[in-house]
Amino acid sequence: MRATIQLCTYNRATLLERVLDACFEQTLPEDSYEVVLVNDGSTDGTSATIERARARATCSFTVVEQQNAGLARGRNVGIARASGDRIIFIDDDVLPLPNFVEEHLRSHELRPAAIVRGGAINVESFDDLPPPVWSWKDYSGNFFWTTNVSVPTATIRAIGGFNESFAEYGWEDIDVGLRLRFAGVRAIFNPKALAYHYKPWPRSGEIEKMERQARAQARTAVTLSALHPHWRTYLATGENPVQRSVHATLRAMGVPERLRRRVGAITGDRPLETAELRTVRRMLASVYFEELERAIQKRNAT
Image (cartoon, rainbow, N blue to C red; front, side, top):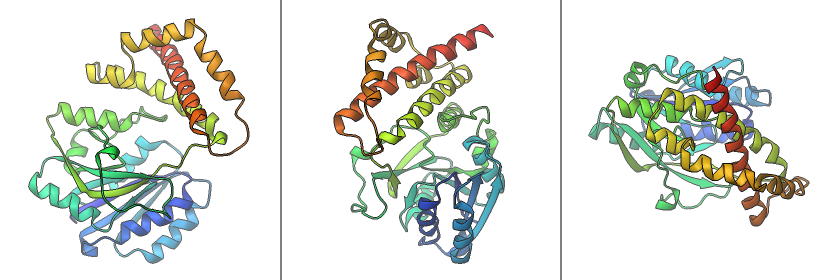
């Protein structure tokens, strides 16, 4: 088996059907790749979606059901079940093009030991897709971004896979990328290994969820910094004197409270206006650094 497409899903039934169909519609021979899906305790219609997908699967299709345990655990379960020489990670909101796997493998033929990073085009709907042409406006600087990345399966297993101490939202793929980078693994970019990434415009009804994610990401940022006390980590997470001082000053000036009052005036469930979204993002940044300080203090007290 040349390649494994590995993805985890949680309550994304409406997207998952399209994503799996795209995984099955690859240009490679059907016996040369597989799809390994981990269902992380979904409570929506995911199980029915998976059963419909089984009937349409044209390549080997493995499904693992687990209690909700988080993405890191799900990825490790998927890695354990992978039989491909290369493992290609995507998310359950990523729609790969038909030549997706072929392009990843073409890059691996040129650089067999490397990480291959593919291109992702952000879209607000899978029903209205732009031309499949990647541009620099869609560039991500992440060394290992599981939206679209592949690596020799033996390599990811050799570093121990994903660290399951990242039980909350955020940073688990950055941790893997840092360990691979420090192990001397190089990365190359192939913009033709292309996928569409579902990124809908934020809605007012999602603000509470966005805040919960910001707080979780701050807590896992401290986990990342403890594992990797390196300038790359301190810069990425904001756990550095400059950014912490800026946000401490803003808190002393009462800026977060004013932002929260303005966000609190946003009601209903509708697409956010551009000015509202700017305010929400500023509020989320203040929430992140507030929670970051709490997590740092908790870590230092232990």
